[in-house]
Image 1: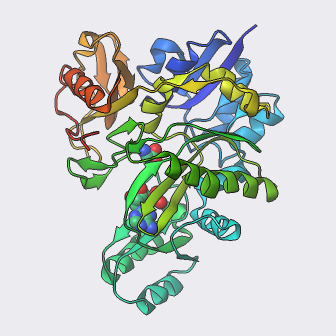
Image 2: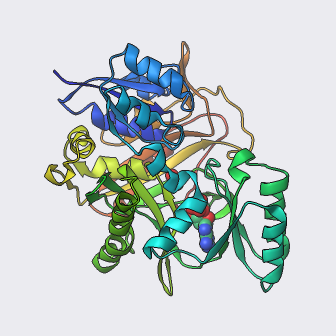
Length: 420
Ligand code: AMP
Ligand code: GLY
């Protein structure tokens, strides 16, 4: 008898993972809470929100779920993995204690300092006056000010000078724009370099690397405009050679797993450190205790193997035994968004053209909803279009050739994903 699997989330990331799980003969039933118009095509959507851990535990029991695969950040710090595990559900995802790597930047920074993991120099503060005094004591220059808690990817404010840093402290600690995520603040050295997204399957003791990916966080071409959840991605990352990959494993991923285990909070699930390659070497910008979006949409299609089997092996603590590989093909993902995103935008526009895409091009839904009259927009990031090809250049051409066939009012996308 196959498994009954639960995912939580409603992004293109969850659709990509649901799509891949559907190909596993080991999966009988798949549930996504709350899901979207795309997950509805491959799974059963359940109307429970990601932070409603009581509700998630209730529907897991109701539907006799026996496996939970964590993809997004919200439920783990609230103890979903701990509670489901206690209820006999096998889980691939971090406990609340392990998820602190993402849910508390102050914890993550102190953890890295304890274990010699390279990161930007920093100080943490729970008090606004002390933080402001510290900023005032530094030479006037660039800094990064971060709300310590989960802030939907928006809690890091990159500042050019003292004035901007003080404003950032004000916004986080006094105006409390990120709510209790701003109870503590991290003030850190601003680094220069280029970023890569690192993903690894983890089982508490062992890790297995996924391919490196590059994402595009800013809203507009040329990396300008507001920070978004991510406007596109590609994999493999052309700039990550074997030497750099080995260094990231040895100096970041391996010591993170060892350190968490040594501290009594072994990390299980997907670990996604964001790494900056600076002139002085690699630095961890942050840990994410989840899969990246849209990185997942370019990583998952390259997985040669059964995703469920890999995650189950990890959940059972025998990741080393899992058999899988990675396709050498390149993947390019372009996010089609609602005009105005990440600020204000309208919902409910009819989406046309999804049926006209090439049969081997993948389209993963995020903000979509199936209505009687057709598929309509229901969020900022609407769809991710993913093309694979032998070269990155060809994958890019194919992705854009297909993106242009998708039509809805005010549709927008970046034109420079994977452009070098
Ligand atoms: P975080 O949420 O900590 O990953 O920060 C979000 C984004 O802010 C990162 O992807 C970087 O582009 C930028 N960032 C974060 N920390 C730093 C830093 N110390 N120096 C320069 N840029 C940073
Ligand atoms: N793509 C950035 C993130 O998932 O945080």
